[in-house]
Length: 311
Image 1 (cartoon, helix red, strand yellow):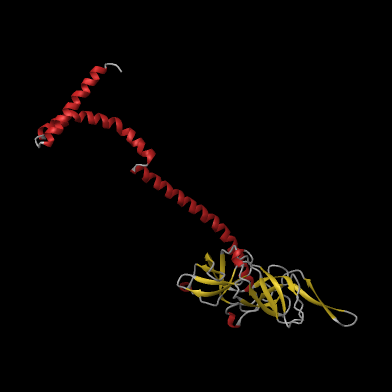
Image 2 (cartoon, one colour):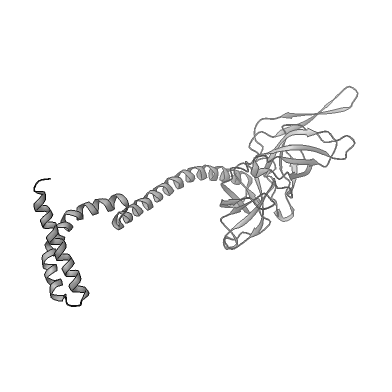
């Protein structure tokens, strides 16, 4: 280092002056000396501040100084808002499609509905969903709930702003149904697996001699006063018929029309149809039951599908 002796001398003088000021301050007689020290060291401190301030500012911007933290916080809020708006737009597209199908089904059936969104799913021991409308919107227990594909369930509990819906697939759910294309009636019970992706239903047909075959469709039979179920809502399709030798009833597995794992927009029927829509709301051609008579005049029932929608 150049001029090392001179540098050491300057540092020594500064050190002696500092020690002298400390000693005077300790003895309580350094007010004037402290003023002199300020006059002496002030320019040095100012130079040090002028040099270090840009570095400190840069360091704060890197390590998170107060102003930097505020900027980062604002950017994070803006980013979160943009993400929320994007998700909302994407959800709205899906909801719009579901709402469109729902309105078409309700129109064909003559159901007056109030649309709602599913905001929660699942219960402790039951297959349920929670909707974002309740008593303040005029919703009451024992009202039918459907979506653009068919039956979803029935309202069981209502708070001021929300409603609880027991899904048709819940093990405690029982719905009166009718075979499309005929007057054969029965009941459909849930199996309690809808939220885990199963969601099959079990049909019990009351007439053991009625035609029952895979591919047949079911609609709600309707309750007295349309509560809890209005008539004509599509329920599902027969997947397989179970053998029950000697039984007075027939049973079958049913695949529901509604997908209970993707519920978004649903409709609560607040007023039933003026006339029973029968099979006109079914999404696919309803089967027409025919009977073929053999030479021995022993009726051998068969099921065929007829094209077109009735009604």
